[in-house]
Image (cartoon, rainbow, N blue to C red; front, side, top):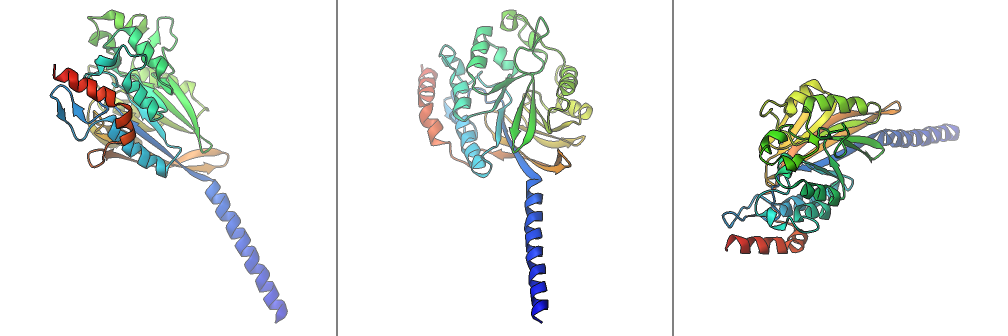
Length: 324
């Protein structure tokens, strides 16, 4: 009887040990990547429209900041991207001569990892764009802005390592900047803008074997515009993307095309786009197991007090200018 009890005890102990070991191995072979995104902020830090001098309750980087902090409390290693059209509109040009523009300073204040150049970034002198590129502390991306010698104006992509997973993020801009800025060609002097699909395919080839999950950060709407491909067309041709964060169209959008999640958070800080990507280790490679995306609206939340305090001078000067 004692021998049977001893054997049973050993069996139970081994079962517990192997159960714990299995749980550890299983846990070690899965991980989750969270990516957050804004787009088309158009000069809005406070929830205020300075053209009409009226409050606008569902806008502003200060409200985006509240959501970012909430999400980082859940996922401290979340990546944060902005898809462009950041420094233009809403009296933002009052601050163009500062050493660092408040909108860029705001992105830095919140530790954005990626800023994608939008077409409205070209509304001003090229030197202003170059200053904004130089003063942003994260990665400035666009795969289809080239110098005349064929080299990239800024990085086409950036590869981040999160929880041992290689996350490649590719930037893109509408290629029609030369038409939209035709009256001021000095704004894009020495630059060319090849097609979005063409460059996407090129960059994916460049990235082959270098990433575990591929993300688009496009200043492109879901649909095409003025003859160029939109995010949906790229998703149809390039299923390698798991998620495409997009902008430019000023729409709230969250759909799946060809297995690719495409999400746009609207304009002015209406919402924070969120993607949660579950990764599983298969052999020695990470594979995407599941993707969920959502737009988290800013209207129900209060603006972040730290951002309000840091950029009160922007609000005060803009209000004063609105009442001249």
